[in-house]
Image 1: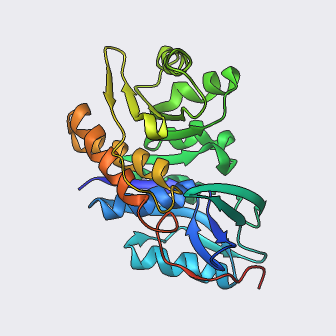
Image 2 (image 1 turned 180 degrees about the vertical axis):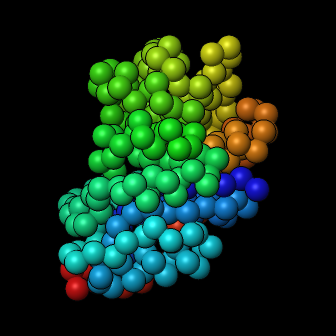
Length: 270
């Protein structure tokens, strides 16, 4: 059984045109996708004692994600207001609410029961990356963050470093991957949307084209790709098989609204 924990951000994504909100956030999404792929997953994070928090908690439980370390705090659950141009999202406004939290020693010890841990750059947990990576293999999503000093700080701890290649050409993507590998990352995943993805190791790079579908909503596709790649690496699949499965899974995510579904009427701050 592949066992992966995710610690960090969560949010309710509020689709204004649909008057609906959906559970989301990089780390929450990864936890849910791992469970859907057949792994055992857990989510470590913080939500408010409001209806948005209720939605997140209910969705996680229904997706068979361990919520032992999910805390409910006074204050609002994080939310993001989203518009759309065709199937692509446009971020309009956000409030981080109580989602930025300080891990306890109990949180860190909990991670020892998992083969890997996923953290995203938007989670505000960089000060705890070293301690967390001592408990479990680290997957880290750099997303579109580009500072070389940040890569050099986090890269040495990464089993899987993921980068959004949006706006990068082949040479720029390869240079970032090379830098992460040189400073100690074992695997580097660069996702490039409709241009496919590349999984790099010290010895070779593996490529896959995107699986072209008529997208309904692209939110969560990148997180799906990361989750399936990490799952496949831990399961011992070949890199080319991993990329094929990840591309199929990411395409499937684009066929429904919200990163993981579970829509309800927008209700934030209460």
